[in-house]
Amino acid sequence: MKLQWKNKLQRTVMAGVFAALLVVLSQVSIPLPTGIPVTLQTFAVALCGCVLGPAVGSAAVGVYLALGAVGVPVFAGFSGGAGALVGMTGGYLWAFLPMAFLCGLGAQQKNKFLALALGLAGLAVCHGCGAAQFALVMSISPAQAFLAASVPYLVKDVLSLVLAYGAARAVVLALKRARLVTLL
Image (cartoon, rainbow, N blue to C red; front, side):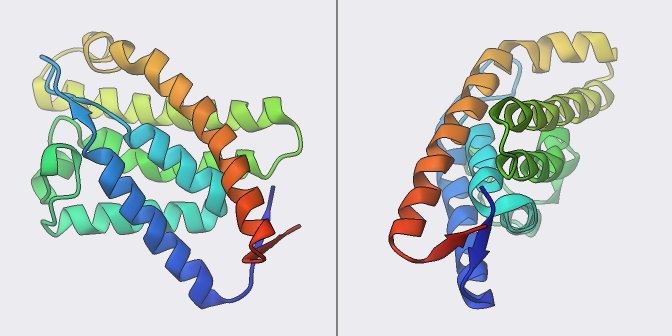
């Protein structure tokens, strides 16, 4: 479902609202021994893309990353700063941008399977980049990094993606009923 915003201000406000939602859901965190916590970030990133579309969804994630980069404690565990972006979980954070874009692109497709396939491609990019940076920072092989830093989270992340897609449909329909957006 592709949205048409009434004006630029509304589009900007919605990007800010979803960036704030991403901040809040990032704090729902369960630490694991790998140093990578279980969070609702992937759900929130997918929701940003699916509701707002590829451009505005990516912008919302970009706002989140920019806030974290300058030190605002928005990342999981109330962390922030440029160090988080170059640390062991930084690859996941950077890859939230293409993930949001691909989820947004997918949500605009009429075919639900294509929509989910694009979302899964975004998730694959996220895990690929995340595992690659984890391998570099931890000085381990990419295969070891993938097994330690991605495999334990895959089922949760795929489920998060599917739930975000369903939740996005409900949010978009509510925005339409409230006459805040029109559907193209």
